[in-house]
Image 1 (cartoon, helix red, strand yellow):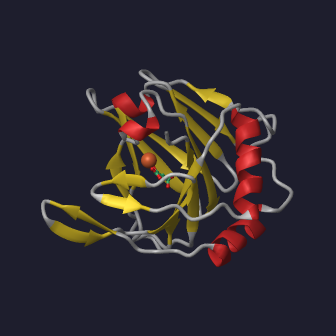
Image 2: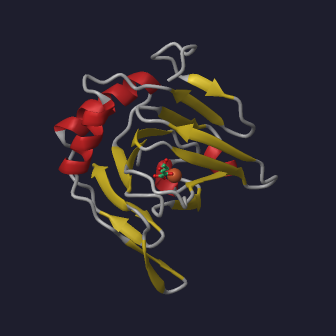
Length: 198
Ligand SMILES: O=C(O)CCC(=O)C(=O)O
Ligand SMILES: [Fe+2]
């Protein structure tokens, strides 16, 4: 967090064809390091596989899906785990910060620089036409890459621990996003994307 932001304000990031806003530190009753450690310890992490052109590929990260609805992407159907007290407390803080409701959260764990997420849009029909997605990060800062589908404009945002990035409006329709691999040896990062699945 830098000296000039007011803690607790979601600052809009100017972007064409969509909406983005960043809160530098989500207020929670625990330090960021404790939230990271509890998420590492309490989550039944799994390495899922996706099938692309008939071939199975293990994902280069660990995941867990929580909430009330199952979620399907790239031929992978995830059955939800029940909310934990920690995740309910985090969800309440995220909802208060964003002024939106969420019924599901995808946890992604990037164990080191070799873990990544390919460029994609969160545009599954069950997220609705203009999905509101709130992305909360803990642990190592990694660059979040956004690329415009048509003009290929690229934006990098360093997602620091405790930060909350809100994606909404037409962002998923016009932009891809992802987390690149890094050749550097990096520590653990956990990202939580809160969503509303109908
Ligand atoms: O790890 C991140 O910051 C991105 C996660 C993401 O894009 C997703 O879960 O759909
Ligand atoms: Fe995403």
